[in-house]
Image 1 (cartoon, rainbow, N blue to C red):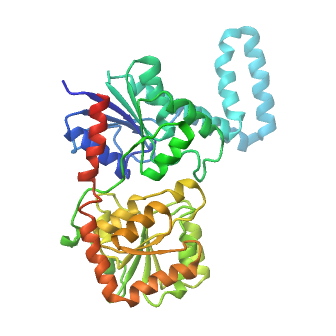
Image 2: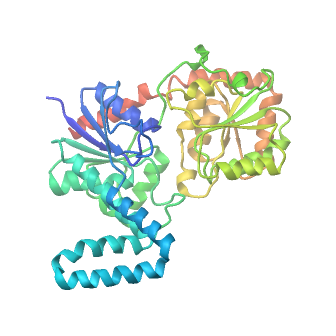
Image 3: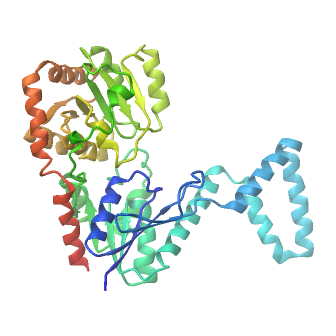
Length: 431
């Protein structure tokens, strides 16, 4: 009988390439895989239950508290009508009177009112707890043999299902360095991870730099499963002509950044470097928190004619866009160990499309770029250094051609068809 896997991920599962590859590999190897994630109520086309063509099932739990939402809207409406202080006093009087007559029943309205007047952070925490509860409930709906938690934010769900409610195997798949990561500065993350990692059967990290970091913290060396893309030959497809799509002359090189437009990824430095590029149009493919800010910076510098923005595209289509580029950027800034230790899938997506890179000089990235001779490494904090890297690749066509050829050789090694065996082997040991 096939082993059943209950996997958790804290997103909507619309653009998560790593989780898609892992679920697909496990399903193809004969496991029954259910991926439990979060539904987006704003996306009316998103199914709550989805049978994927790759052979696994997606279960999305609600991210809404409908009753609280309705009461909140009514509360705001009343506030606009007669004012916050008047509403508060009125509710207090009603609750006191209601409590005199029916004391036990007063608990429900009190709780609802408290939720309304509590700070937004506490209301968010309440919603967070509700989502976790729903994920655990979904994880207990079937008798899974193995639970697989992607990242720290789903490890409590896996622990509750595998250790508290059932005696099952638990795998912790850490895609990031949870204790040194932008936006995760609260010490609670380190405390939580230290508690949970001692109670898992297997911990997975993305590369050996990160695995060594975890060994130094926790006293054991995690398994390593690299985040390599599925092998493809996008150069054989004419599905996307990015030059035509953006009205860029075909003789003008596209200098591409693809991925999340977030802080710490060197994108502000990239924009500042654009005036120093001897030629080329910079294209950003993706969305993120600082996209508007970055677009404003482009306008301030008068670079609209040299910088274009494209919304994020489905992960299965991305390489068809990538192949249009002359070079790709992977210029993370050293703002935390998570960035410093990254071997981002972006690097390997460029490689898969035979696109040489201008990359940061961080250990995992530099090792691949220089050993395989598929690009140049620069000081990603310095716009002039970035520009020097770009101009070198523009002005040295013989070396550039060699880099493109090296990408095609390297992609035969750095791909998911090879790397997925590491995942399957560890699952066989755990099973």
